[in-house]
Length: 86
Image 1 (cartoon, one colour):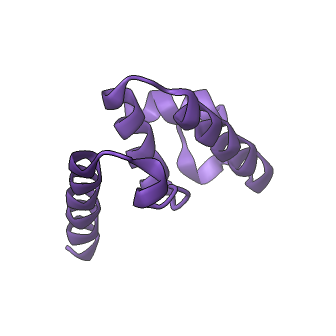
Image 2: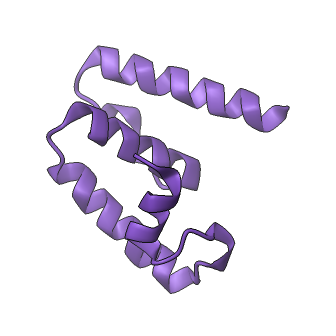
Image 3: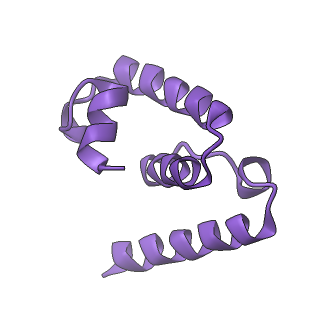
């Protein structure tokens, strides 16, 4: 999943700063629906990661039934949080 492509898919622009609030709300709703319907584990995780970076990801216990996927998500969260501090 390419970040810019996903932004364009859900928000109509790859410029995150140019997304109006209504478009952000509608796009995140579509992401949540797609996340719930996605069956490919890799694409599902990628979509969750994008939602996490945008601050709209569902909680890990809701998002991932598999313990290994929850652990991978926690590792991703830690990595993003460390990068934000640097």
